[in-house]
Length: 425
Image (cartoon, rainbow, N blue to C red; front, side, top):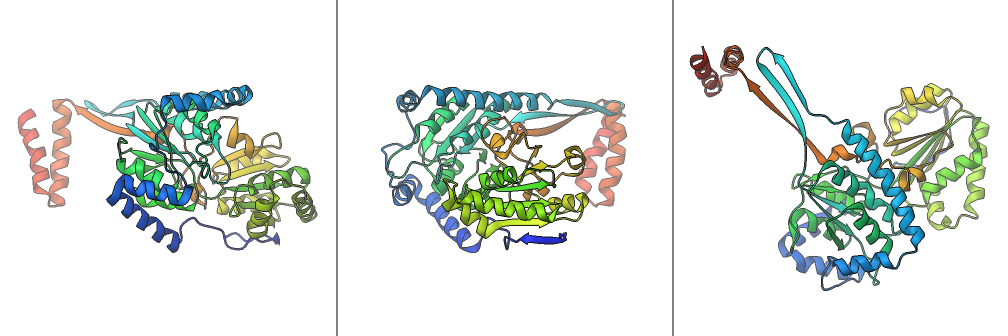
């Protein structure tokens, strides 16, 4: 790993979602759920959430009632956010075009993008009712052309559902809505239980148990990515506003005691000013109980001796969210590539991407940004290929194929080519 010139604060070991204890718990639960079906679902729901409805799926009347109790401003703001997500997803879909290419005379190769049939969307709601997460998986799936989207969201313990979440899920386009949380929810969608048919892809963020369940269910169905505890990194130079940098870092720290919070700066006095500002803001932050734990356990401030070293450190860290609060952001944009989503300039902030602006907030964590991006319309499409040939092109290809197959000693393969030479010559 790149070593920064100076460390003002080190957060210790970086958290990864998987651990042996979590893996064991989830494995045992999934085996139980697959064997005992809805009986196990009900048992876990009552145990963990004090929730035992007659049906976990909401009826049309229950969904309508959820929307009817909301303040009109919540409804309007949800429409604004979802409209941005939908517009961006439509624009992304328009870039994914079919292809047909004549690789040699008479030999046509092609691909097309086909949506999966069914998607299971998990909308988290543990510490916070994150109803803004509904549009992040449901809308891109529907824009991709997915026919069936089922959504699960956990209940408010002992109370039922959060109306704004149900309204957002329905407005985003879900076909079925279940009030059910955690591992049982993912099992319901992956295995298919009750009237629920198995889905082709599971998507959505969640806690470490949700992330581990997705990991273990991969193969039974597809998954979007492993999205664990959230992360933010800010790259800032001496021209940035320390109060604004501190504010943005703490904005993500409130998510979870395991949130990753990091600052890379190119000026040590600036970094120390940011540290003081963070401590100052924590004294009055309404969610300081969680944010202070996150900062104490996982907060980091690095001082790089150059812009290039700042880039190298960020690329190694591969954060979920990366903010640039620097004088020349374009220089950094051209050199950075390992991040889930990039926020360029102080005018934008992670909260915009989380809630409002239209980019997706289901993003890779724990260095997964090295090899994948976040959820987008393409996650719900399969790119499938085809080929067609004229008789003359078939003969040309067959002669090479037969020779290659015999080198590999795959004689039956070679014969399938030989017969075409005989037929079309």
